[in-house]
Length: 90
Image (cartoon, rainbow, N blue to C red; front, side, top):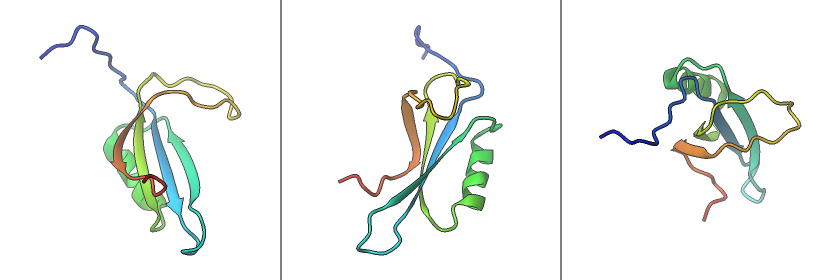
């Protein structure tokens, strides 16, 4: 099926959230990453495996073309979850 409004992003940016809970009585700590030069999802999954250190993670792909912007500027692209869960979600 072909959709007239189909959009393609040949080199998407991925977002990875690592979640860690220091102890049961503590809240979850978030460490967020943007992977913008990955050659594909396999490379992203390999990166997660090497960097997760046993932490829970979420993996997203951004729904818009990546934009170069300063670190202080929040990223506003819509996200599509590919894997993982947010431990703060009900």
